[in-house]
Image (cartoon, rainbow, N blue to C red):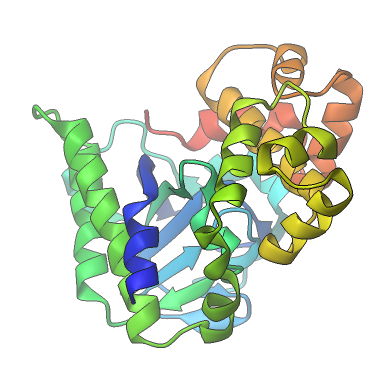
Length: 306
């Protein structure tokens, strides 16, 4: 328990967005994906989640970077890849651009995205290798989802701070739920330990602040103060992935953040996150996320309330 207290204290939590969705017609989405943690509260209606039925009132939790098959069903439904869904979202959901708290009453689902990073560098839930799962009988988490949405549409003073506070409480309640229900014991035992090594923390921080710089094994070895020949093995033993794969994911995560928050061109973004050629960046982006970089930007313009 003490280890988890230390981890929680080192978490950097950030609210991203909340939105309500009214289902217009049944839909199945293959390989839903986001680089941020996603919570889907089933306000009115069920969802088939990786072939498991999640009942009304439950909550789906999809860690950052993990995929899930989702079926929003009220009868026979149309099947779409995530890439196709992005361009057709308005055919299936009433995406209210000016929501207020009254819209919750008719919403089928409330979606909430947030970040939770260790030392502001590593996606916490993803690093634990926790799969998407259903949260049931968790009234505190349910209450926080609703409070977050209420605050999202609020015009009152202190809105941003309230959203931050609610989101931090949400993360703690999810961690408590996992621990109290004894979920994912093997993953927690295996993967929660590597945060104890300060050398690895230094490497994480260095990668995050130098995405467009030298991130060779030689550079990482210098930061960790270990030999260049050993740094790849050292990193993989503690994290489960090799450093260059981790670096590429961080670069892509940085690219998605810029796609969502700036009007920079894809060429500018690819250069800023360390890719020397735009064509190569675009190929890798689509390979990793299943959709082109430009379509990821379009996706957020369709469903982002802000």
